Length: 377
Image (cartoon, rainbow, N blue to C red; front, side, top):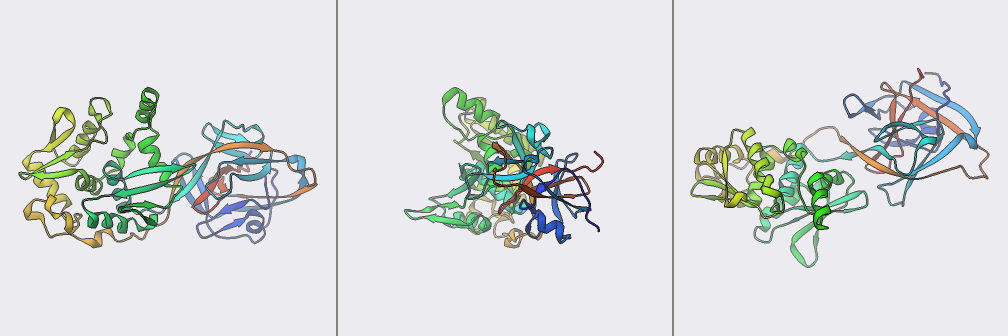
């Protein structure tokens, strides 16, 4: 494939992310790398992997043709930057904008890698409804798991979420904190940065854990099982779930949403204790116990109906062999700068993909921000 020209370009040092590695765009174009690069499908709102269909080496241009865009970064640096021609289009929350028209109020659409398998995600979601919680640092979040009464069950969670790289607290054997990860910030947003949490913070000045509708759209039987193991009990062969974590929600709408999700799986219950506890019918308790019997680790078997005990299947939690999941994040623009005076010229490169987008500015699990290159324009 011959090198072509295009007037919308990136500086040669800009990094471009692939499913295998990342490269400077200069080396990527010169070597015509065949690795699949990360792109964004706007219609599906999904990130995809595609090979470049064209490479562009546009030679040198004057420094006044370029602009430096600085934005929040998940790396060790205070911010990250990309250098591109002023007319280069970058995707923001409000749509595509030329780099020269960006402002410090803009948020760039970016992408991060989520290493969790579907089973691991369900353990995470169930824990966040129960005994786990998240705390943040800039763009990243860390998960804390704790359980002073069932250390063996706590270790079952830590082992199954080992990709999060937990460390035990020195003074507390029953508390584990994961490394800070970029993708965990998306889960933080589901529980701490949603409409209900913002509304409560305005009223009380405190940050409460609540939940977004996305949580119950995502959670399945495994996630509900983990939540039950955290906060449920079996009384007279009936499943009870009681949680104090969501008492601050008006009319305890948490349990209304929870009952609706259980109903999706054919399980019926009622609210007790002024709406702060739910109890299943005996029929639904039996059905739920049967549904989760292979998920329940031996130390927690007492929460199952007798007939369903000793059927734990650890192989269900083996790491699934699947491609990396890419998730959307937003990176705030910090500042826009001209190129330094001592730089006379800059080398220009670009690529084109099947959907006319690709990601630049990658760093570790951060795959970069979305830029646009449609040769028909």
